[in-house]
Length: 260
Image (tube, rainbow, N blue to C red; front, side, top):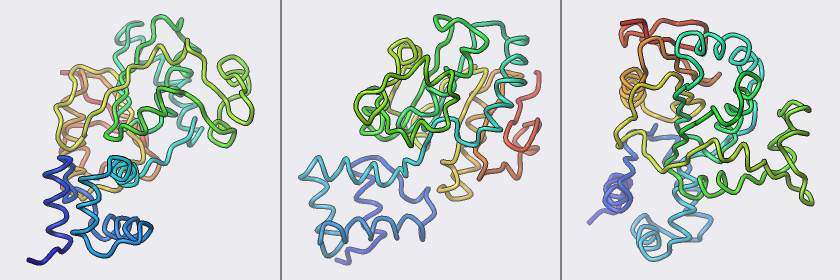
């Protein structure tokens, strides 16, 4: 039997239900080969045996796979637009109880950023954000809420003073911010999407998907939004066929589901 990459993709799916076919193959195969090399293992079959028998290696593999690159207030101009224009507009349409989903939330930087942005407009006890990610290791870090100085360097000074406590070389986000976010494990490629959301934030994740998987995900986001709800995507992404899906583009990174 030939233990090639095709075999490995099927085996990984049987073990984790992660569909590697949905990721750009050249990019993903290179990442996996690099990781295999770090363990000094030869062959996909031996690496797969390691994944089955060593939970730490499996966790490392999933974390490596999901490409957790995140930071608070990443591309700050887009967050400024969120604060000044999008949040007031959403509140005008839907009131103060906004339903917000941070999809592929990684280590929590993004959902916590959302809460801090909303805190400029609403009392914290009125803010609730659903945050989902495939990677349980990333979710564990998000729930802990402890970050290096570099990770929070984009946070405005007033918010940093208000919501972070320095502990040695690290910074811990306040419980009052953490309590506004509900973290859950979910796979964008496999699991059902929540419904009737007013704002969905999913940034710098879909660039790793194939065009087919990307299109399917954007269509699912559209179905997940309430009419007049908004999807906020990353600076490295664009929805080429947004009109075909049904979106109206508000600017380069914000797309609206029209009123029914």
